[in-house]
Length: 186
Image (cartoon, rainbow, N blue to C red; front, side, top):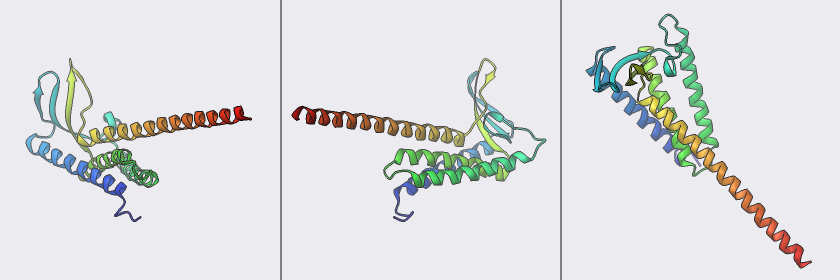
């Protein structure tokens, strides 16, 4: 079956394109309405919209302006992740739509953040949650998609393993019952 007619790739690329587009549209809106490092309180003491740049990875890891190599590291990581996602999608069983959708969310989130890195040499983050002066690191739509995609992919893998174990146990009991029934006849 060709890639064009394979529903796994339609789901993967449909989710990825949808996430990357939404991510970039929201980031364009944020950068248009808020100056760099600007902030608007949405829920006082809990949630602000901000316009910041993160040169590093998740939670600000390697977010330093005095080093340039992290751009190349994250560029390579995004390309590698894309390759792994394509390989996992190809290896996935047909009908594993939730798993492939999860991979699509991850791919779209990685693409959205990669576009930022190419354009700005940093990722635009804008969601800032905080309580009593403690701030969760700011994040964006791409980050949400990556986390949701990872959860969905893990959930479907664990669910399929659980089903496989149940099937194996059922098959074992059925085989044991048939063996016992056969033994009683002898």
